[in-house]
Length: 76
Image (tube, rainbow, N blue to C red; front, side, top):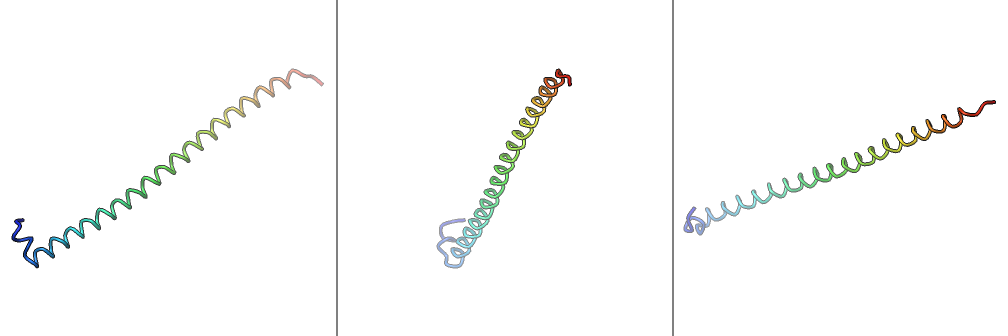
């Protein structure tokens, strides 16, 4: 588009409207991206917590096994 067309009142308004529409679309897309990034962060936190819980469960099972072995040595 040439400068004369932009300086024309009707064409200039159309250009400004196109720019405005594009900015609105970019704003909407940016907000969507922010929501998705937040969801990914939450999932990462949940996965970390789940991993820690699984690790703790494995440690507790090992302790229980060791305790059963130790108690099993005693006879009544």
